[in-house]
Length: 367
Ligand SMILES: O=P(O)(O)OC[C@@]1(O)O[C@H](CO)[C@@H](O)[C@@H]1O
Ligand SMILES: [Mn+2]
Image (cartoon, rainbow, N blue to C red; front, side, top):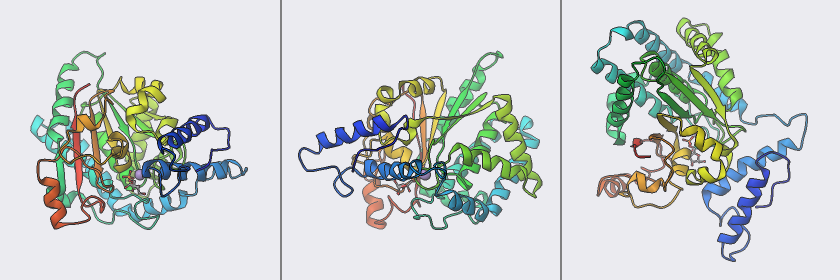
């Protein structure tokens, strides 16, 4: 690993982090691909690709993963139509739903967003990994693969907040730390639309990446491209979604943010120190939803925790607001399991932590 040699705002932070890695390697030589922590070297690789491009105008804003992301979007077309159609049908009578019905729909869309996280192009090394079938019919079959299910906690928080939101001024703000573009992003936007339309949230703030990242992660360009694509689709409900979502952004009930911290190698327990402005922004949130596996690795510091360690402990004092991780398991890290749960899974399925078949919706309330 060598220092970065470009002039981006995050360059000094990356180079300081390299120094830090040199110091912690305890004289075991230079930080390097096979010796240094995987989280660091993997992030570094994506940042080095970006550096190579930065040095080569006019392709300095080229996204080498754009083609794969676009292809994956089109390959998921049928599944996208299915969720957009489901949402639009649901919105027709959302005002008439009672509390239980609303909760049932919320749980469904949370699970769709969870399984949407299977579609990531980093784990498949850029190969096709799109959603081919409609997820909605399969949710019951997948239920037993949810290893930690804190959907009730998330629901109670949002419902209580909605009940308090009687005056016009009170705000329920949901922040979504986005992961992959393509089908997963659509499922996140569908969930956000449901939250806004049911008034479970008065504001939704999305957070994307500043540079191409882990192949399929959402950049501002991907976000805008997706909305335009939906709008111009030859399908009524897809295009309705695209129109409404752009409308929400224009009205300011939805806000898109990016911050360089999301493309640094740091674990989130360093955020308050490394990016105090972002930490302060997240403190305004009623609940933060972290999508995906990489965010889970950064939430827990990518450490080899015992499976039964409480999520709160693994967060290592990262508590800007109540938060919830929604991820399918693709990296060998998991906390907050019941005693024996992890060991049992390991005996029946050696790849349970890395094959994306299992998922969690894991909540931490305390600030
Ligand atoms: O964050 P995501 O999109 O859910 O997953 C990203 C990911 O596939 O990338 C790495 C492999 O390259 C793993 O850490 C992780 O499983
Ligand atoms: Mn990703």
